[in-house]
Length: 310
Ligand code: MN
Image (cartoon, rainbow, N blue to C red; front, side):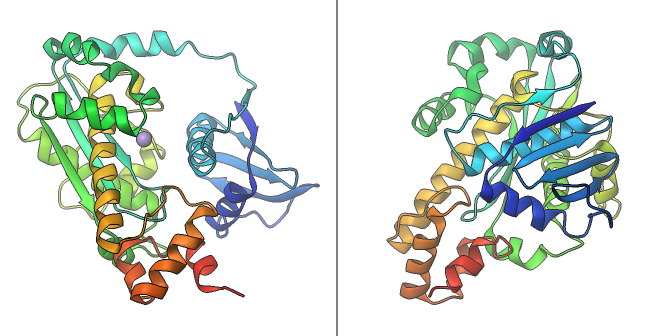
C-alpha cells in the first residue's frame, strides 16, 4: 500500500524533527529524507509531498494527515491512495451496534495545554440517545457545539479521563519517552481504570496512533496492561464510545485552555503554528521563561521561536 499527500512547511518541520533518528543513510533524489517507522517507509520530498509505503502505511499517513490538518486548520488535504479505497462502512458495521469501550486523546498537537485521554463505555442501549443529540457527528462539531453537547451525556456515560499537565509532560518527555509512548501510557491507564467498572463489554477500541506492536512495546514496563484491543483509524466513526471519548477529552481541553487564558490574562491559541509565538512571548515577558514549563510542551519547536526574537 502506498499513500501520499502534500504537507505545509510547519508539518514538514515537525516531520524532519520527528524522523531525525529514524532516517536512512541514503536519501532518494529530490527527497529531504527517507525513514523507517516500524514497517512503514516514509519519504518526504522537497516539494512537500510525503509518501508512506508498507502494510500499515495508512496508520502512519493518517497520523501525519491529522497533524497537517491540526497545524493548518481549514486546509483540505488531498490524499492519493494506491490501494482500492476500503469501504469504511463495512469495517464499521461490525462494531457500531455493540456494547464497547473506546478511547481517544487530545492536546498532542497543541503547544499550549495538557494532554487529555478519555476512555468511555457505550452500551448498545445508549446508541439511540447519543445519536439523537448529535454525538455520531463528533468529527464535525466545533468548540461551541462540543460545550453544548457534552454536558448532555457526560453523566450518563461511564468514562475515565486522565489529564497530563504540562509540568509533568515536560518532566517525562525525552528521547526514549516520546509522544507516542506518553499516549500509550495514558490510554492504557484510562482503559484500565474504566475496565474495572465495566463487567461486560464486547470490544475495546483505541483510535490508532501507532502500530499495535509499538503500542505494547511502549507498555513493556507498565505495572498493568489492558490487552485485546482493537486498533482502528478514524475510530470515532466506528463506535460511539470513541466518539464520546473524543468529545469528553475535547470538552475538558477547551475548558483547560480557557482556564489558562484567564489565569494568565493572555488568550492562548490552539495548535502549534506561527500564532503561538506572540502569545508565548507575551507570557515570557509577563511571567518569565519558567512559566512556559507550566503551560506549554517545551520540546515543540515553538519554544525556540518564542525565545529567539531578533
Ligand atoms: Mn485520536
